[in-house]
Length: 275
Image 1 (cartoon, rainbow, N blue to C red):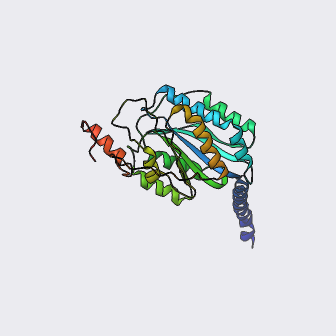
Image 2 (image 1 turned 90 degrees about the vertical axis):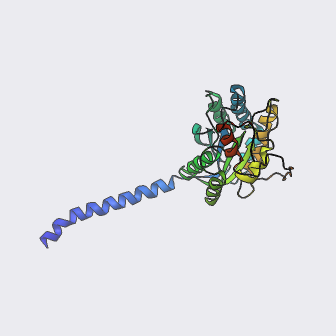
Image 3 (image 1 turned 120 degrees about the horizontal axis):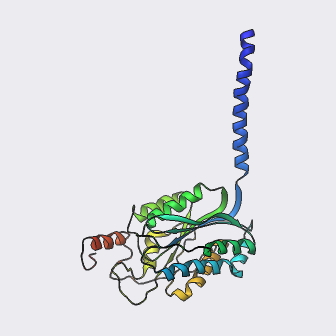
């Protein structure tokens, strides 16, 4: 009996430690913040874009976030809050403004201010697949529980680095995350073999997916801020724009390996695109 009594303190310590760990886990679980939407803004900063265009993107998002329309969309939700994160991507990814919950005009203004506080140079290559995987991981590991979870990805070209874009897309969709697209189809009149006219078809076919998924193309830089504002309002309010039918073209944007083929031709020193 004495032996048993001597074991009790150690046993109690073990039980208390387990209870303490369980208590900490329970506390951690209660600290999860419920939001109407978890939204990852993935913004292309590949070297195909000029420094002026990179700055225009940041300022365009800042302008949209400060608009009355976006604030009204936030207020339209059940919980009237949204968790946002802003990430720039190319061949790699970097978080510019980390997760924060916006509920008021002041929150939106603060997020916008952080966006334009420092402008960074562009990155190399275009890995949509890598960006999507990164965005999904940001959602899966954050401290928020959204009624909806969305990745919003912009880009001025098809995937040409990393795994197949369709595999990355399908993996993200399997996690219950919707993907929307903002294809940048602007042109300064010069031709590049990396250009993919009607990039929106590629995004529709190979990139976006999930309930209510949509694409909003940007065809002229002066329209960028308005396009971003429209996109944010639709995403935050949970709306879907009317579908748009676009004719096919010579360099088939429905080929989800088209970006890899373009890059392969470039690397092999071939002058044109081989379908």
